[in-house]
Image (cartoon, rainbow over all chains, first blue to last red):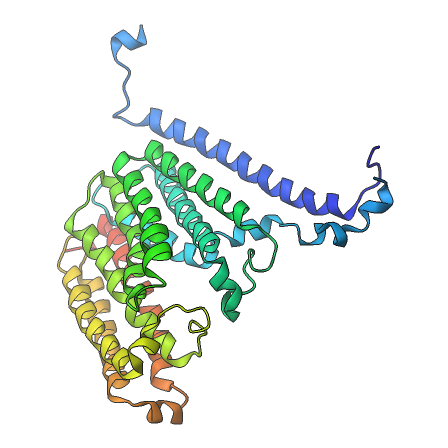
Length: 52
Length: 315
């Protein structure tokens, strides 16, 4: 059995899924931003042995 | 199952299915605004520079941690919330979210917020956030809220931690300034809430939550408001002489605390007959002033920090 017709339930769940998707996308962007901020910090340094 | 059977969504309970907004409501967004504001002030008042992205992330994760404790509070207090008018429309008593869902949501977000704050800033800030969540849920919600009329005093501590966490996120330590910012919110909460309790007919009695107005009487509540306000005024003005204070903060603190003290004395001098005659005018004015009081104090600390680079803020 397939649910071919658009049901009201699908609309409601779409809003929830969209909200969660946007939150996850924002989280990915934030972690990326944090990474850039951390590696740009003057205190951030990789020791020579680790670098090699 | 046919497509037709799906249309009987009411029978299946799908109409009551939680939306994104219901899960957001579990985080107590109004409480979160205070958390965000005070954590922000704690962070910018700290005597170190913080990368804007790291600062933003720190405040976000503190807010998520605060929201998670709100969800756990609703999980534990679902029985009380269902009885009281003010809280009866919350997602659990409204039947939108189950208690188990709220518990899982709160626990998952708590862990997420603490780990992410630790990774973004430092372990002290993460530890303080974890302790705040533990304190609010275990010490306040589960243990003391239904046991002692001093519940508001103890619960206020949980709401007072954010500026200290913000400070710790920036500096990696806790100083006297951070402790005094904590004390400011801690001492402010009881008179703020007891003034509200005097002029609203709250149904805590139905929920069997001991409130000072009921257990010790309204006269005793008026005395409590005055005592806490005197202690708060001394503390708020004392904060002005630390490194986060300055002329702007001190001027704001002196004016607001004189006004607040006058309000507390007015409440103390009145009896119930006088209050009922003017529909609790003094109590309502005091409550409104308390909202401005906390916002203006933390706003003044922020102003001192933001103007300092231009030679205008601080001592």
